[in-house]
Amino acid sequence: MNHRQRVLAALRREDPDSTPFDLRFTRGAWATFHARTGASDPQDYFDIDYRFAPLNPPSTLPDFTRYFAGRVPDWPAMPWADYRPVLMEPGSRQYPHFFLLGERTAINEWGEYRIYDEQLSYHRKVYPLGDPECTPQQVDTYPFPDVFAEERYSGVAEGIADLHRRGLADLLFLEMTIFEKAWRIRGLENLLVDFLVRPAVAERVLDRVAGRTRYIATRYAAAGCDIICLGDDVGAERSMLMAPRLWRKWLKPRLAATVQAIKTANPATIVFYHSDGNIEAIVPDLIEIGIDVLNPVQPEAVDTAGLMRTYGASLSFWGGIGVQTTLPFGTPGDVRRAVRDLLRNAGPQGGLVVAPSHVIEPDVPWENIEAFVDAARQYGRRG
Image (cartoon, rainbow, N blue to C red; front, top):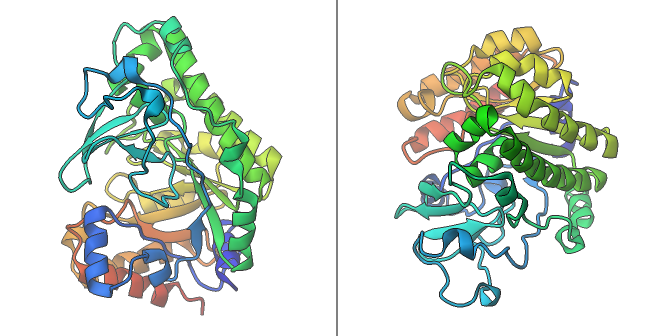
Protein backbone atom coordinates (compact mmCIF):
# COMPACT_ATOMS: atom_id res chain seq x y z
CA MET A 1 0.00 0.00 0.00
CA ASN A 2 1.10 3.57 -0.56
CA HIS A 3 0.61 6.24 2.11
CA ARG A 4 -2.83 7.31 0.92
CA GLN A 5 -4.16 3.77 0.57
CA ARG A 6 -2.87 2.93 4.05
CA VAL A 7 -4.45 5.81 5.93
CA LEU A 8 -7.76 5.52 4.08
CA ALA A 9 -7.89 1.77 4.69
CA ALA A 10 -7.17 2.31 8.37
CA LEU A 11 -9.91 4.92 8.78
CA ARG A 12 -12.39 2.77 6.84
CA ARG A 13 -11.48 -0.28 8.99
CA GLU A 14 -10.29 -2.23 5.93
CA ASP A 15 -7.19 -3.94 7.37
CA PRO A 16 -4.26 -1.77 6.23
CA ASP A 17 -0.79 -3.26 5.79
CA SER A 18 0.31 -1.25 8.85
CA THR A 19 -1.31 1.18 11.26
CA PRO A 20 -0.57 4.82 10.40
CA PHE A 21 0.80 7.16 13.03
CA ASP A 22 0.86 10.93 13.38
CA LEU A 23 2.49 13.59 15.53
CA ARG A 24 2.62 17.38 15.46
CA PHE A 25 4.72 19.85 17.42
CA THR A 26 4.34 23.17 19.21
CA ARG A 27 6.94 25.82 18.37
CA GLY A 28 9.09 24.91 21.36
CA ALA A 29 8.96 21.19 20.65
CA TRP A 30 9.68 21.84 16.97
CA ALA A 31 12.89 23.61 18.04
CA THR A 32 13.97 20.41 19.81
CA PHE A 33 13.05 18.34 16.75
CA HIS A 34 15.07 20.65 14.51
CA ALA A 35 18.09 20.64 16.83
CA ARG A 36 18.05 16.84 17.07
CA THR A 37 17.46 16.03 13.41
CA GLY A 38 18.52 19.06 11.39
CA ALA A 39 15.22 18.69 9.52
CA SER A 40 12.53 21.35 9.25
CA ASP A 41 9.43 19.33 8.33
CA PRO A 42 8.35 16.60 10.79
CA GLN A 43 5.89 15.11 8.30
CA ASP A 44 8.65 14.53 5.76
CA TYR A 45 11.18 13.38 8.36
CA PHE A 46 8.86 10.82 9.98
CA ASP A 47 7.26 9.83 6.65
CA ILE A 48 3.71 10.64 7.76
CA ASP A 49 0.97 9.29 5.47
CA TYR A 50 -0.89 12.58 4.86
CA ARG A 51 -0.25 16.24 4.17
CA PHE A 52 -2.47 19.24 4.77
CA ALA A 53 -4.62 20.22 1.82
CA PRO A 54 -3.58 23.50 0.14
CA LEU A 55 -5.33 26.42 1.80
CA ASN A 56 -5.24 29.96 0.44
CA PRO A 57 -5.22 32.80 2.98
CA PRO A 58 -7.37 35.88 2.39
CA SER A 59 -5.59 38.70 0.61
CA THR A 60 -7.25 41.30 2.85
CA LEU A 61 -8.95 41.29 6.25
CA PRO A 62 -12.25 42.82 7.34
CA ASP A 63 -12.03 46.19 9.07
CA PHE A 64 -12.22 45.46 12.81
CA THR A 65 -11.19 48.98 13.88
CA ARG A 66 -14.36 49.77 15.80
CA TYR A 67 -14.00 46.57 17.81
CA PHE A 68 -10.34 46.88 18.80
CA ALA A 69 -8.98 50.42 18.38
CA GLY A 70 -8.05 51.69 21.85
CA ARG A 71 -8.64 48.28 23.44
CA VAL A 72 -5.56 46.34 22.31
CA PRO A 73 -1.87 46.95 21.62
CA ASP A 74 -0.40 47.27 18.12
CA TRP A 75 -3.56 48.27 16.32
CA PRO A 76 -2.49 49.77 12.98
CA ALA A 77 -2.17 53.56 13.19
CA MET A 78 -2.73 53.80 9.43
CA PRO A 79 -6.23 53.52 7.96
CA TRP A 80 -7.26 49.89 8.01
CA ALA A 81 -7.74 49.97 4.24
CA ASP A 82 -3.99 50.57 3.90
CA TYR A 83 -3.00 47.69 6.17
CA ARG A 84 -1.49 44.74 4.32
CA PRO A 85 -1.64 41.54 6.36
CA VAL A 86 1.52 39.48 6.89
CA LEU A 87 1.02 35.82 7.75
CA MET A 88 2.29 34.88 11.20
CA GLU A 89 3.35 31.48 9.86
CA PRO A 90 3.91 31.72 6.08
CA GLY A 91 2.91 28.52 4.32
CA SER A 92 0.62 27.41 7.14
CA ARG A 93 -1.87 24.75 6.09
CA GLN A 94 -4.12 25.14 9.12
CA TYR A 95 -7.21 27.31 9.19
CA PRO A 96 -7.71 30.08 10.03
CA HIS A 97 -4.49 31.87 9.10
CA PHE A 98 -3.20 34.44 11.60
CA PHE A 99 -1.75 37.78 10.55
CA LEU A 100 0.86 39.78 12.43
CA LEU A 101 0.04 43.15 13.95
CA GLY A 102 3.02 43.52 16.31
CA GLU A 103 5.81 41.20 17.37
CA ARG A 104 3.52 39.25 19.71
CA THR A 105 0.04 40.20 18.54
CA ALA A 106 -2.00 38.72 15.71
CA ILE A 107 -5.52 38.52 14.31
CA ASN A 108 -7.40 36.28 11.90
CA GLU A 109 -10.21 37.01 9.46
CA TRP A 110 -12.85 36.06 12.05
CA GLY A 111 -11.65 38.81 14.40
CA GLU A 112 -9.91 36.54 16.90
CA TYR A 113 -7.25 38.80 18.43
CA ARG A 114 -4.35 37.13 20.26
CA ILE A 115 -1.63 38.46 22.53
CA TYR A 116 1.15 35.84 22.66
CA ASP A 117 3.79 35.02 25.24
CA GLU A 118 7.46 35.54 24.41
CA GLN A 119 7.76 32.04 22.90
CA LEU A 120 4.71 32.64 20.66
CA SER A 121 3.18 29.46 22.10
CA TYR A 122 0.42 30.55 24.49
CA HIS A 123 -1.83 33.56 24.27
CA ARG A 124 -4.79 35.42 25.67
CA LYS A 125 -7.69 36.57 23.55
CA VAL A 126 -9.62 39.82 23.18
CA TYR A 127 -13.19 39.24 21.95
CA PRO A 128 -14.61 41.65 19.35
CA LEU A 129 -18.24 41.10 20.44
CA GLY A 130 -17.32 40.66 24.08
CA ASP A 131 -19.98 42.95 25.53
CA PRO A 132 -22.25 40.70 27.62
CA GLU A 133 -25.26 42.73 26.47
CA CYS A 134 -24.55 42.27 22.76
CA THR A 135 -27.69 42.61 20.62
CA PRO A 136 -28.81 40.69 17.53
CA GLN A 137 -28.37 43.89 15.52
CA GLN A 138 -24.70 44.08 16.53
CA VAL A 139 -24.21 40.55 15.26
CA ASP A 140 -25.95 41.46 12.01
CA THR A 141 -23.43 44.26 11.34
CA TYR A 142 -20.33 42.29 12.37
CA PRO A 143 -17.84 41.82 9.48
CA PHE A 144 -17.77 38.04 9.19
CA PRO A 145 -15.14 36.83 6.70
CA ASP A 146 -15.73 36.46 2.99
CA VAL A 147 -15.01 32.79 2.42
CA PHE A 148 -17.11 32.73 -0.74
CA ALA A 149 -14.61 34.57 -2.97
CA GLU A 150 -13.49 32.30 -5.80
CA GLU A 151 -9.84 33.26 -5.30
CA ARG A 152 -9.88 31.37 -2.01
CA TYR A 153 -10.17 28.09 -3.94
CA SER A 154 -7.73 28.77 -6.77
CA GLY A 155 -5.38 25.80 -7.16
CA VAL A 156 -7.08 23.70 -4.47
CA ALA A 157 -8.23 20.85 -6.72
CA GLU A 158 -4.86 20.81 -8.46
CA GLY A 159 -3.00 20.74 -5.13
CA ILE A 160 -5.11 17.86 -3.85
CA ALA A 161 -4.61 15.92 -7.08
CA ASP A 162 -0.85 16.46 -6.83
CA LEU A 163 -0.79 14.98 -3.31
CA HIS A 164 -2.73 11.98 -4.57
CA ARG A 165 -0.28 11.50 -7.45
CA ARG A 166 2.51 11.45 -4.88
CA GLY A 167 0.69 8.68 -3.02
CA LEU A 168 -0.25 10.90 -0.06
CA ALA A 169 -3.62 11.44 1.57
CA ASP A 170 -4.76 15.03 2.01
CA LEU A 171 -6.38 16.49 5.11
CA LEU A 172 -8.27 19.79 5.49
CA PHE A 173 -8.00 21.31 8.96
CA LEU A 174 -11.33 22.97 9.91
CA GLU A 175 -11.31 22.25 13.62
CA MET A 176 -12.96 25.01 15.66
CA THR A 177 -15.88 24.44 13.31
CA ILE A 178 -18.83 26.15 15.01
CA PHE A 179 -18.71 26.51 18.80
CA GLU A 180 -15.08 27.56 19.18
CA LYS A 181 -15.15 30.10 16.36
CA ALA A 182 -18.37 31.53 17.82
CA TRP A 183 -17.06 31.88 21.37
CA ARG A 184 -13.79 33.38 20.13
CA ILE A 185 -15.95 36.18 18.76
CA ARG A 186 -18.36 36.45 21.72
CA GLY A 187 -16.28 35.07 24.62
CA LEU A 188 -16.90 31.63 26.11
CA GLU A 189 -18.94 32.72 29.13
CA ASN A 190 -21.00 35.13 27.05
CA LEU A 191 -21.91 32.50 24.47
CA LEU A 192 -22.91 29.93 27.09
CA VAL A 193 -25.13 32.55 28.71
CA ASP A 194 -26.52 33.43 25.27
CA PHE A 195 -27.67 29.81 24.93
CA LEU A 196 -29.93 30.34 27.93
CA VAL A 197 -30.98 34.01 27.99
CA ARG A 198 -30.08 35.58 24.59
CA PRO A 199 -31.05 32.90 22.08
CA ALA A 200 -31.37 35.37 19.18
CA VAL A 201 -27.73 36.39 19.62
CA ALA A 202 -26.58 32.76 19.83
CA GLU A 203 -28.55 31.80 16.73
CA ARG A 204 -27.12 34.61 14.64
CA VAL A 205 -23.51 34.00 15.64
CA LEU A 206 -23.69 30.22 15.25
CA ASP A 207 -25.51 30.38 11.91
CA ARG A 208 -23.04 32.81 10.38
CA VAL A 209 -20.08 30.79 11.56
CA ALA A 210 -21.54 27.39 10.61
CA GLY A 211 -22.64 28.53 7.16
CA ARG A 212 -19.17 29.75 6.25
CA THR A 213 -17.39 26.68 7.58
CA ARG A 214 -19.88 24.48 5.75
CA TYR A 215 -19.18 26.29 2.49
CA ILE A 216 -15.40 25.79 2.79
CA ALA A 217 -15.83 22.11 3.67
CA THR A 218 -18.19 21.52 0.76
CA ARG A 219 -15.83 23.13 -1.74
CA TYR A 220 -12.96 20.93 -0.57
CA ALA A 221 -15.05 17.76 -0.60
CA ALA A 222 -16.11 18.52 -4.16
CA ALA A 223 -12.43 19.02 -5.07
CA GLY A 224 -11.65 15.46 -3.93
CA CYS A 225 -10.44 16.02 -0.36
CA ASP A 226 -9.79 12.74 1.47
CA ILE A 227 -10.24 13.81 5.11
CA ILE A 228 -11.96 16.90 6.51
CA CYS A 229 -11.25 17.64 10.15
CA LEU A 230 -14.14 19.24 12.00
CA GLY A 231 -14.43 19.72 15.72
CA ASP A 232 -14.99 21.90 18.74
CA ASP A 233 -13.67 21.43 22.26
CA VAL A 234 -16.87 20.70 24.16
CA GLY A 235 -15.39 18.40 26.81
CA ALA A 236 -13.64 18.97 30.11
CA GLU A 237 -11.61 16.33 31.96
CA ARG A 238 -14.58 14.49 33.46
CA SER A 239 -17.66 15.77 31.64
CA MET A 240 -18.83 18.14 28.94
CA LEU A 241 -18.57 21.93 29.10
CA MET A 242 -22.33 22.12 28.73
CA ALA A 243 -25.23 19.78 29.34
CA PRO A 244 -25.57 17.30 26.45
CA ARG A 245 -29.10 18.62 25.85
CA LEU A 246 -27.66 22.07 25.11
CA TRP A 247 -25.12 20.57 22.73
CA ARG A 248 -27.95 18.72 20.99
CA LYS A 249 -30.02 21.88 20.72
CA TRP A 250 -27.38 24.37 19.61
CA LEU A 251 -24.51 22.51 17.99
CA LYS A 252 -25.67 19.08 16.79
CA PRO A 253 -28.07 20.33 14.05
CA ARG A 254 -25.46 22.69 12.60
CA LEU A 255 -22.74 20.05 12.72
CA ALA A 256 -25.11 17.52 11.13
CA ALA A 257 -25.84 19.93 8.28
CA THR A 258 -22.12 20.36 7.67
CA VAL A 259 -21.48 16.60 7.61
CA GLN A 260 -24.43 16.06 5.29
CA ALA A 261 -23.17 18.77 2.91
CA ILE A 262 -19.72 17.15 2.81
CA LYS A 263 -21.12 13.69 2.14
CA THR A 264 -23.45 15.04 -0.55
CA ALA A 265 -20.55 16.75 -2.31
CA ASN A 266 -18.30 13.67 -2.05
CA PRO A 267 -19.49 10.48 -0.33
CA ALA A 268 -15.89 9.21 -0.20
CA THR A 269 -14.67 12.07 2.00
CA ILE A 270 -13.91 10.93 5.56
CA VAL A 271 -15.20 13.28 8.27
CA PHE A 272 -13.04 13.54 11.38
CA TYR A 273 -14.32 15.16 14.61
CA HIS A 274 -12.06 16.59 17.32
CA SER A 275 -12.89 17.42 20.90
CA ASP A 276 -10.58 17.29 23.88
CA GLY A 277 -11.89 15.93 27.16
CA ASN A 278 -14.72 13.57 27.98
CA ILE A 279 -17.54 13.66 25.41
CA GLU A 280 -18.71 10.07 25.79
CA ALA A 281 -22.30 11.28 26.28
CA ILE A 282 -22.52 12.46 22.67
CA VAL A 283 -20.47 9.80 20.86
CA PRO A 284 -23.67 8.01 19.70
CA ASP A 285 -24.91 11.36 18.35
CA LEU A 286 -21.69 11.85 16.39
CA ILE A 287 -22.07 8.40 14.82
CA GLU A 288 -25.72 9.14 14.05
CA ILE A 289 -24.91 12.29 12.05
CA GLY A 290 -22.16 10.62 10.04
CA ILE A 291 -18.87 11.29 11.82
CA ASP A 292 -16.28 8.70 10.73
CA VAL A 293 -13.30 9.39 13.02
CA LEU A 294 -13.03 10.54 16.65
CA ASN A 295 -10.01 12.49 17.90
CA PRO A 296 -8.02 12.78 20.18
CA VAL A 297 -9.24 9.91 22.41
CA GLN A 298 -7.62 11.52 25.45
CA PRO A 299 -6.67 8.66 27.82
CA GLU A 300 -6.70 10.88 30.92
CA ALA A 301 -10.35 11.72 30.24
CA VAL A 302 -11.94 8.66 28.59
CA ASP A 303 -11.76 4.87 28.72
CA THR A 304 -9.97 4.38 25.43
CA ALA A 305 -10.32 0.59 25.40
CA GLY A 306 -14.00 0.86 26.33
CA LEU A 307 -14.69 3.34 23.52
CA MET A 308 -13.03 1.06 21.00
CA ARG A 309 -14.98 -1.97 22.22
CA THR A 310 -18.30 -0.16 22.20
CA TYR A 311 -18.05 1.91 19.04
CA GLY A 312 -15.22 0.37 17.01
CA ALA A 313 -17.58 -1.24 14.51
CA SER A 314 -18.84 2.14 13.31
CA LEU A 315 -16.20 4.66 14.35
CA SER A 316 -12.44 4.97 13.87
CA PHE A 317 -10.02 6.68 16.24
CA TRP A 318 -7.08 9.07 15.84
CA GLY A 319 -4.92 9.72 18.91
CA GLY A 320 -4.86 7.80 22.17
CA ILE A 321 -1.39 8.48 23.66
CA GLY A 322 -1.49 10.89 26.59
CA VAL A 323 0.33 14.22 26.44
CA GLN A 324 -0.54 14.94 30.08
CA THR A 325 0.95 11.73 31.46
CA THR A 326 2.79 9.13 29.39
CA LEU A 327 4.66 11.27 26.87
CA PRO A 328 6.03 13.97 29.19
CA PHE A 329 6.43 11.92 32.40
CA GLY A 330 6.76 8.27 31.37
CA THR A 331 9.88 6.40 30.39
CA PRO A 332 10.55 5.27 26.80
CA GLY A 333 9.39 1.83 27.95
CA ASP A 334 6.10 3.34 29.19
CA VAL A 335 5.59 5.00 25.82
CA ARG A 336 6.22 1.78 23.94
CA ARG A 337 3.77 -0.13 26.14
CA ALA A 338 1.09 2.54 25.67
CA VAL A 339 1.44 2.31 21.89
CA ARG A 340 1.36 -1.49 21.97
CA ASP A 341 -1.73 -1.58 24.19
CA LEU A 342 -3.55 0.98 22.05
CA LEU A 343 -2.95 -1.10 18.93
CA ARG A 344 -4.15 -4.25 20.69
CA ASN A 345 -7.34 -2.49 21.79
CA ALA A 346 -8.06 -1.34 18.23
CA GLY A 347 -7.93 -4.91 16.94
CA PRO A 348 -6.89 -6.27 13.55
CA GLN A 349 -9.44 -4.48 11.37
CA GLY A 350 -7.74 -1.10 11.59
CA GLY A 351 -9.82 1.85 12.67
CA LEU A 352 -6.88 3.68 14.21
CA VAL A 353 -4.21 6.28 13.59
CA VAL A 354 -1.81 6.16 16.55
CA ALA A 355 -1.04 9.69 17.72
CA PRO A 356 -0.48 11.85 20.78
CA SER A 357 -3.74 13.21 22.16
CA HIS A 358 -2.57 16.74 21.35
CA VAL A 359 0.44 18.49 19.87
CA ILE A 360 3.83 17.60 21.36
CA GLU A 361 4.86 20.14 24.00
CA PRO A 362 8.44 21.16 24.91
CA ASP A 363 8.34 19.08 28.11
CA VAL A 364 8.24 15.79 26.17
CA PRO A 365 11.74 14.19 26.24
CA TRP A 366 13.22 13.52 22.81
CA GLU A 367 13.80 9.88 23.82
CA ASN A 368 10.04 9.48 24.31
CA ILE A 369 9.34 10.85 20.85
CA GLU A 370 11.78 8.35 19.39
CA ALA A 371 10.16 5.56 21.43
CA PHE A 372 6.70 6.58 20.17
CA VAL A 373 7.74 6.49 16.51
CA ASP A 374 9.71 3.26 16.87
CA ALA A 375 6.85 1.49 18.67
CA ALA A 376 4.26 2.73 16.18
CA ARG A 377 6.33 1.34 13.32
CA GLN A 378 7.18 -1.94 15.04
CA TYR A 379 3.84 -2.84 16.61
CA GLY A 380 1.78 -1.36 13.80
CA ARG A 381 3.08 -3.76 11.15
CA ARG A 382 0.59 -6.45 10.18
CA GLY A 383 1.75 -10.01 10.67
